[in-house]
Amino acid sequence: MSLSGKKILIAISGGIAAYKIHFLIRDFVKKGAEVQVIMTPDAEHFVTKLSISTLSKNPVYSDFYSDNGTWNSHVEMALWADVMVVAPCTASTLSKMVHGLCDNLVIATYMSAKCPVFIAPAMDLDMYAHPSTTKNLELAESFGHHIIPAESGELASGLIGQGRMAEPETIAHSVGDFFDSETEKTFVGKTVLITAGPTYEAIDPVRFVGNHSSGKMGFAIAERLHELGATVILIAGPTALTTTKAINRIDVVSAEDMLHACTANFADSDITVMSAAVADYTPVEVAQQKIKKKEEHFSIELKKTTDILASL
Ligand SMILES: Cc1cc2nc3c(=O)[nH]c(=O)nc-3n(C[C@H](O)[C@H](O)[C@H](O)COP(=O)(O)O)c2cc1C
Image (cartoon, rainbow, N blue to C red; front, top):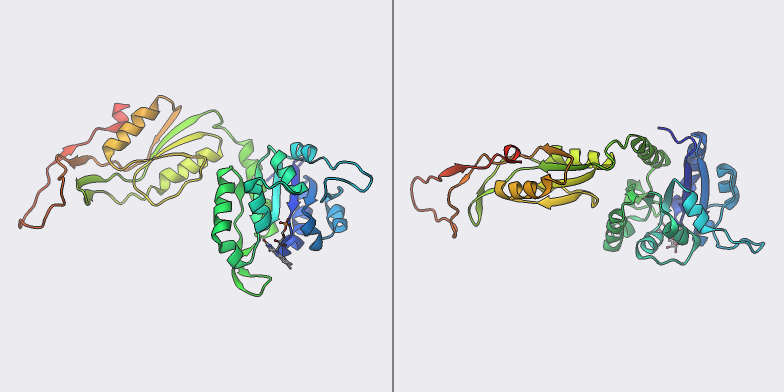
């Protein structure tokens, strides 16, 4: 993991976990990164500028203006950074970030930044589990930000649950892994078409012929190729698996749906990965009504499905 020469902008907000940031800064600096720290006015109740600036070897800002009347340029700091790390990220700061409530230096800098943003939320368990936090984290993820989930354990309130900020080593690893993957972004500019999961072939409105494919392999390939810079089109059969928003996901049900989705997207792709478990046979007829249990024996006539790969 090489952080040497990387410019890391750390934004601290007003949570008890702010004390852990000293270790994160020391770690980044030890690895050769340049660290600039900004903080919200509330964060000043939790950590001192003196300790942070000593460790980061740079002045720490929490206001737009310095005492001598100069502007602490949020634009310059934002454009300087290779990555921005918001840690700890309070419920309040998270909410302001995703809704553009730009009332302090941290949010103005964040909104001016073009670099990747890492968010390490830290809250008491009920705040973390609150639907507004869940929604705001989803929004942040949809902006392409990297969420470093809070961990479970004893919280400052004495309660036990999920909400404590990820350990500094975990945050440092996430940032380091990001830079590592950046250096191997071999798939930038490539569009990859991937199929994954099973297909379900309808027998009647409530029954189908399917298979046990989980889709995990195709989804993992999709996530990795996305990390390596590819534009990913994922054609997914029925599965409960989730994907990050950056992946262009097309959900299909039957082999025929998958064929159509592949045909429509194949011409735009540079690479195609067929990992779906597509049904080889499908019922000749689909009953319009639920088939009643009457006969002692019952057969379904099946016909061959189109071989998707051969047809592309
Ligand atoms: C002792 C103490 C600990 C707090 N810890 C947290 C916390 O871990 N997470 C959080 O979202 N808010 C926490 N808060 C509340 C925030 O400080 C408060 O919402 C504040 O307005 C956050 O402002 P900021 O996000 O601009 O820094 C804490 C407050 C106090 C007094």
